[in-house]
Image (cartoon, rainbow, N blue to C red; front, side):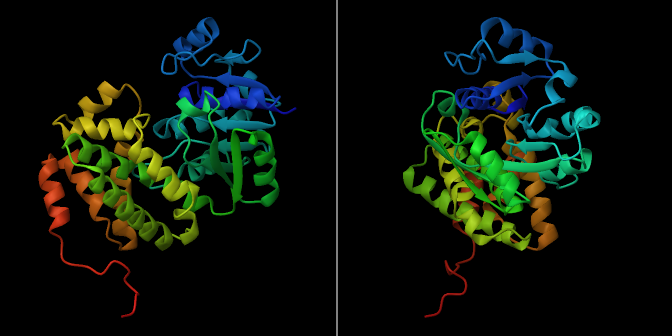
Length: 334
């Protein structure tokens, strides 16, 4: 039995808390929000996942020391925009070599850092790892089968975390490609916004399939330029996560995209979804990375134009369709 703290009391954190509890571990859930701690202590469920009940022996707390000290693993499950602030807040309590598993997805606007890079900068003494893949909290919380990937700098850390999470409903693979995993997880949210916008415009399955297929090409193009492995982008943390995020109504990014396609601003869409829409935060960072590494991301570029420049979504689709003619596989020989 391991002692594990979930740092972040949102729906994903709660789903993982239940999973780890069912695996026989001693679990604590920490939140920076007093109202969230009180809700979890009193109701034993999160308002965003009604009916998914926290066992009584899972401790819910807002006390930093209680959450961090003596724990075998800290699971960082806060939204990407709060990763740096949370890591800085807890840094002084983290022991040398203490394992921190980041399960959020995003790229920091401005610094262009991945979330594990932020954790390593704010908590240099930690052993940081990541987990990614097709995994909606709503399904994990209900015990529906899911397959996911853990990435770490050492095989030992990856396999340790794999053993903590592995169950008959949660199959875990391991990978050394932390960067590729994090880029896939962050950039798929931007493509999911595009898929939702297409749905909001009333387009069909053909459009969705095209966006998914060309979207993973853009993600892999940037990711490999930055040093990620090609295979990672065509695995669970790449195409697998992209498919589920573009297709499911559990996806906050797709839901926000639908509203944007129907004419709402991204601020109005985020307010209606009532959850953090990670793709909005990662979209601008993705374009900055594209410029830095000299790669083209036409879908992600149009998403940025819609979000931040007031571009008409239907006009963005027309521009994508009327781009210069291309060959699909650039190094293919006739």
